[in-house]
Length: 290
Length: 69
Image (cartoon, rainbow over all chains, first blue to last red; front, side, top):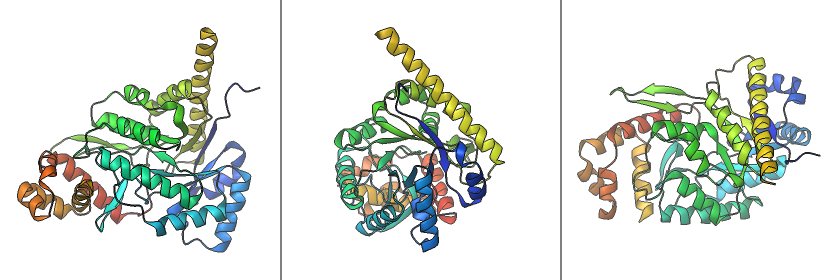
């Protein structure tokens, strides 16, 4: 019998990878669908996604609700997620701890809202609205940011910790986002990992990025999803698996510059190996403590 | 008054031109935009390079896909 709930390793669905995903479905434990790309999907496509969800656990990933905000989340956007979820019947759904708009200004991407009590209160209200609309709590994902949110009175990990304390939502831990924030703000990624409530982690994102220099020569690591996850991300996954108490759903994200699918499969194998080493470490610690 | 700060940041993040206008004359821009005085110190302390980088990055994302992470 397995000592731990089963960990799963898979990848984010992209149409460019569809053929290879179907050919190698036996090597893929789970898939993630980007919700915002499917709102206008045809009936046959929805039927295909639903069929896929029956073959392999599927998560529905949302990117534009803007839950981490003192502004109320748009009910129409929530209704679209709810409808899509009811049609596809995913294993779970997820959204970021980010704001994407305010006062009619559309940022067009995930931004870190000020880490302060008013944002926390708004976030808790929005997560509850999301639960009511969709029928289940989203897995909440940490984001990457290259700017410290102005007006913050807490650190990112304090903010994330308080959101999780105020909801029952699981944490979707994006390890490259964590690494990028550590890199950009001179923090130790391992310290940052350990500061998070790892017992709440149910799902994980792995991705890659690149270092970009601005006009003044200042280097920043951006999470572009166009590169392979660096070794440190797999190291962080191993450390997470050594501490996480629940089964982890690990998703490899790639948005472009797709490598040969054999390279994708190698990255999934690296993730499985990291999970196995972490679980082994946790088992040894447990038996030593017993 | 957190909403006012979020709106102000969204304004800067949603346009490179707005971000540059702010950086040229921070206090005047913030007051003209209606930012409450209690948040003035927060936005005066914004790192100029980080704001420029963020605003350009958001601009780049907007020009690309609206459905990337």
